[in-house]
Amino acid sequence: MARDSPSKQQQDYAKAVLGRNLKVRPGENVIIEGWSRMLPWAAALARETRRLGAYPLVLFEDEDQFWDSVDSREDDVLGAAPSHEWAALGEADVYLHMWNAGDRLRLEALGPKRNEKLFGWNPAWYKAASKAGLRGSRLDIGRPFPSLAKIYRVDLATWLDQLVQATLVNPDSMEATGKPIARALEKGKRIRIHDDRGTDLTLGLAHRKARLDIGRLSKEDLKSPFGMLNLLPAGAVRVAVDETVAEGKIVANRASYNDVGMSTGGVFEFHKGRLVKHHYDTGAEFFDKPFAKGGKGRDRPGALTFGLNPKLHNTPQLEDREAGAITVTVGSNRFLPGGKNKTDFNGIVVNAGARVEIDGKLLRLPG
Image (cartoon, rainbow, N blue to C red; front, side):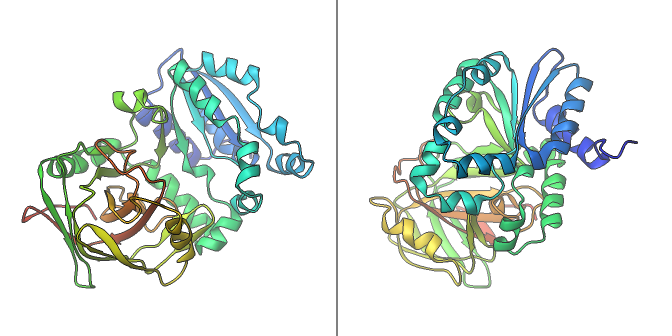
């Protein structure tokens, strides 16, 4: 085998993404977009596309040359919506995206106004993708990067391997586990989360539809302005809770991650439907600063997520998908069916292993 041929790991990954999750069909046009660091994975995806009788087109950006353009202040060109790329989108059936520049810290340092200009093509992209009827995935395999691994305090190779193994998990098994949880959330009135380490929280359920995320796109996803691209690895059940009901405390035993940092030791305490106290041992600023600007609804319970993926464990940016993880949010829940909280703020704590009861009946969770 040639040295630069896709490895077995990359081949297995490509088969899972294209065959089991996206169900690529013969004759379909597939766009694979990534950055220079992801070319071996793009090659594996392109090869598997052809095995399925479909037609791959690989688009890539070189990280070093991108930053050279940024340093040269070529923002108008970088942020443009080029007609030839949009024409390709119009002829595509499936789209795979392996994230953007790996150095998220460097992007953050540019500031929000410049980032908005550099990625000004994004709204037009989604409009074109929706018009084309695309379906596809954002592949988290493109997120690991040395600077991120350092701030997240994880081993880069371990992080990458978790993402691969978690993507290989059969969607059928997560669906079998997640459906009973979704039904219970939709039918119940009160949910209690408790453990032996200080967590005892009661939230309200409002008979809202629970969203099951197993890595396959539903008809509802494809109709959503942003839902035509799911995230892999998958594995979660999400529901918008009653925004007026919350009593008690939840203590995190997992980190909460964002693009440029992490928070640990989170505690949310609610009284009469509002967040009255919160605390993080480290990284409190990632909650406190946006919370201060959150406005109306920032202190209301937002959503519940139950993780289903057995191959994830405190994985950066996927902490809510770990099997047995329970994520409680405050703030916005309008992105979920029935959610009424329109604030832009969203904060989370994650507890893995707590017991859960819905209307007094123990809920069986994975993990």
